Length: 341
Image 1 (cartoon, rainbow, N blue to C red):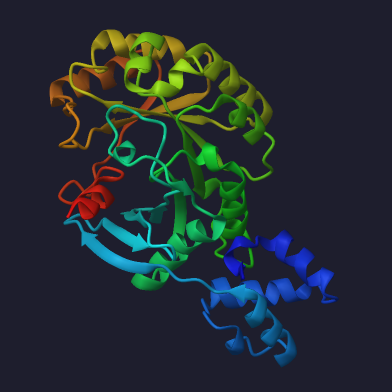
Image 2 (cartoon, rainbow, N blue to C red):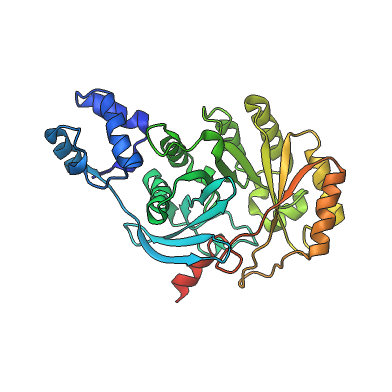
């Protein structure tokens, strides 16, 4: 059977037109699914019974099974969900002063192999389908009885390695008849799959792009991020320049600070030099240590020197507020621990 949450507004409209229905049916179904969060076609009472029966025979309204819910003292909540095929995924809810943000997983496992990351402890099994990403946002919203205002695709997996499903997901949650999450409140993070950055520049929604950089030169980046062996920093920044020229949207540079690895003043100066001609800001991220990895969090004094060096070089920089530090905060940590038990 087909999964109804795999259908964005345009795709579902085309389905209804193909069976002789009007475009208005899409609006009705979307409002039932995403506004009223109904899980049964028979309850969609403003749709004729015959059509409800047809939808019920052709489509599934899926659910995620909650396996574990961890609550941090700061209010961050981490969920372990089971999919229909038994695979496990992680989703995170963060409470900010501007609203609730959900961090979404895009793949089961990850093949990018970043040396410091817990996600890579489990190799990629498959891509998530669009409905499995949409369900993460919808399920969290239902479980906590909240309106999700922001979504970041920064969980387990490389979103640009699952490109088409991610775009369908973004279209669905942005729809004014769906979850109505503003396009500028959506962020996709990639470790730097260069061809997809060029392609993403043509995506009509004004979605934010974040780059997991984590090193200011090729030699170091290749040590900790194998993707750099395929796409060098020069190629990556050429693509980012194209992206900015095409979209006029500022780019976020994510930089996890690893003690005595990438956090010296020299590294900060190299990073500032890289960014001098790019409209970007740097998000410095304290490292959530992973017991299977040798890396340690940067010392507070090294973090402050790095931050100040960028500031003095006129680079827009923030230090990410830590959330969920007292639970399994690192991406992939909760899933990995659960599967080991």
